[in-house]
Amino acid sequence: MASDFYKYFKENMDSLGLDCPETLFATKGTAISTAATILAAIQQHGSKVTVAELIGAGTGLEKLIYLGALRASFYVGAVVGSIAVATGRSLAGGISLADVLMEAQSNHLHRPWLAGVLMRWPGIYQPQVKSRKHYRQSWSRP
Image 1 (spheres, rainbow, N blue to C red):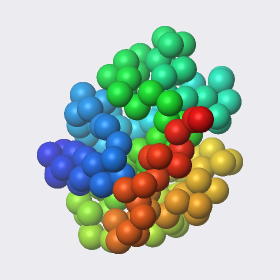
Image 2: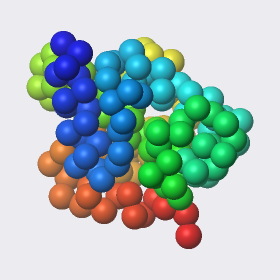
Image 3: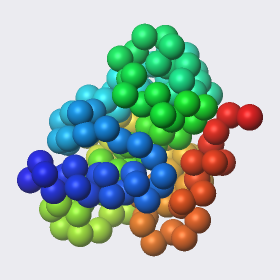
């Protein structure tokens, strides 16, 4: 269900304090497409590039301007995790790191650094992690 997908996706992103415009993430397909766009830009500009820098590079992600100095690699990690959470919740209810990585792989969103981001910050895809509301601050550029 597309509406359930966005509901669960948004719920997970909101709990991380991250913006997720419906026009970019309304369905699993649009969320995967948006994630692929961000990943392509990261590949071109490096994993330490910020969302604001990607917007300035003309990537079509202007709706994410609110995220500013947040590192794009963290944001796309949260997006991939949220895609897996929303898919898992829509279909069955739970999600593990293996599920997130399998979802990323099956949708051509996996990158060598992604597993490290997800292992370091499991709250990206595990709602029960208490400190997840503070993740955004730890991934902003000084």
